Image (cartoon, rainbow, N blue to C red):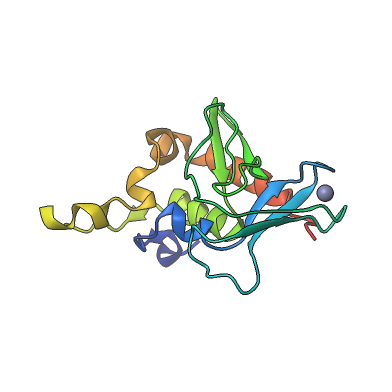
Length: 165
Ligand SMILES: [Zn+2]
């Protein structure tokens, strides 16, 4: 791994950035990997219609309504639209490691594997912008001592993506 690969630039992305695309969930019928997608023709806005589609069993369900972001009350993390459990989630040393999709997983991996993290000094007025996903990541995920375990668990989650129709 080169020095460049260890650098991580906080792209100021929020978890919403990843949720705006396709979100992988556990199919409520067959328990395999299904996708929550933007309904074709609908605005990609977060409050617009989403649809759960399963390439395995053909299950499909739509819902229009306001998205709710973040973990459900239980320790199971659900998608913000249809509230189905995320496909990419698992225990990581007593915490829940989760991602909306592979791009989200890639982003987390880049962050955790980085030994150099670019810190950007921001003014008070930029506070809102500063609250990116990285800024909000839990301490256990950012801790250097957990890096190897987190990376191993990220790879474990990544392995479940094959084959995800
Ligand atoms: Zn299914």
